[in-house]
Image 1 (cartoon, rainbow, N blue to C red):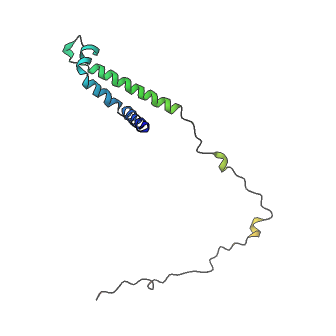
Image 2: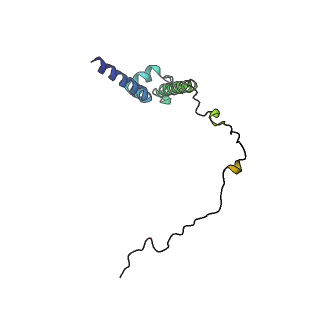
Image 3: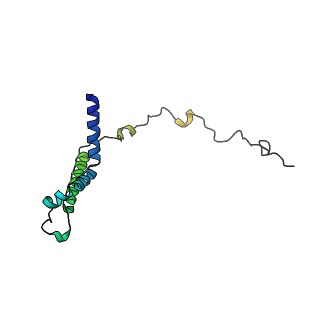
Length: 128
């Protein structure tokens, strides 16, 4: 029972964080009359027909600034992982003993040649 309660609590908190802007807009829609009468900056000027949209814009902008700040902090606090190490690619050749050209006889001429038969491998069936 406790495990299920903890699971549901974590799922709800993750979904609220994921859909935070939608939750702000939904709460604005549900409390629109209260926001327009008490929290709106333009409530003294009804000709603007703001109806609390200034409050909604301010809350959305604050939420976006908070998300940007969290993202910046996360990026700055990431550990630096070395993916490239230059010491792996530094090596020295061993000094050869004696003359390297006399140790291995190399022949560059081709002693054997192979010529594939032109007509012997595949012949398509003849049409009569």
